[in-house]
Image 1 (cartoon, rainbow, N blue to C red):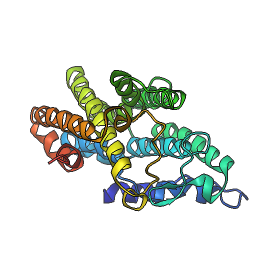
Image 2 (tube, rainbow, N blue to C red):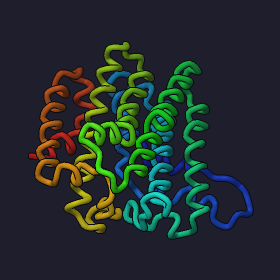
Image 3 (tube, one colour):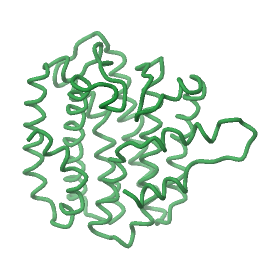
Length: 282
């Protein structure tokens, strides 16, 4: 965590210009905290197998955080969720204006791929990382999920449709964080696929738990706007709180068993990152 935080602070996007708050706005949500869950997944896979590549892997890890942060900034816009609070801070459209928030999101999106391109990794590895992050963070993943989420507000979906929505909106970026780590260290295709599938279900668990937090926690406790999902296709709205908790327990129990089948070094490296989600139901 501390190594990643230090790297983030040194590599904040910064441009020399006469704009009065461009750099400040670019940095604000990145410095506001967050769990850094996705970059930590990538770095944990690298730490488990090839710790000598850890320093070189900080760049793609930060790229994931850039992309994730852009998605949050846009998600909070008045045209989407219209949320005033994120990571315990005012959202950018509140602190500045809508245009600034849109442009900062645009900048962090492209900065993610620029940052990977400058990483100290082989070119074929960097191309693969760019492919995976753009696939699951864009048209074929996160953006698709967000489009479905917004289009079907006030129109209840089936449970399978909700899972499809959240696999794309949330789970794929979590899964691809593990997969990107696996690509960096050169795991074989079967191991890559196993980690990706684990990440998809971990992402679903993450989303259900997030829906439970939205239902049961205050803005101050959650560090973001809660109670904002009444028109959304959340697990809570479709299944109710009690059944959502049971669904989270079922997924967590399955993931715990699969986690035990991972290589011991990988279990050790991932345990501090994933244990709070696997064991939260106990």
